[in-house]
Length: 79
Picture 1 (cartoon, rainbow, N blue to C red):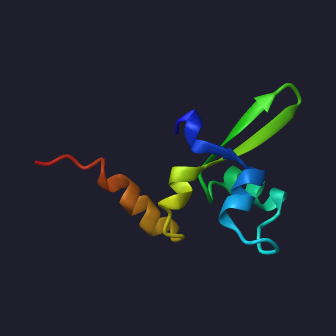
Picture 2: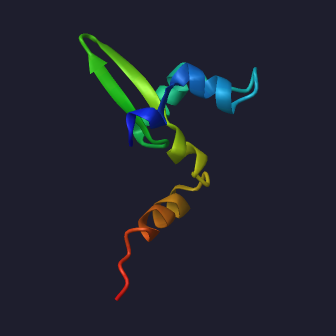
């Protein structure tokens, strides 16, 4: 996950949800913390900043089992 692939929660909410339908900041933080979506938590001093991994979000099917299966497909080596 490269640095250029990460966006702030506010930018994520604006870019991927219509006004009035976006999840709250705390909901997105919880998704990142629980692993429901791929992101990064950056700790600086006594503050944590949360970022969403855009390519992971854009390539997600919404089904964790399917996403896990598809993410492992590129790791298979031909016999």
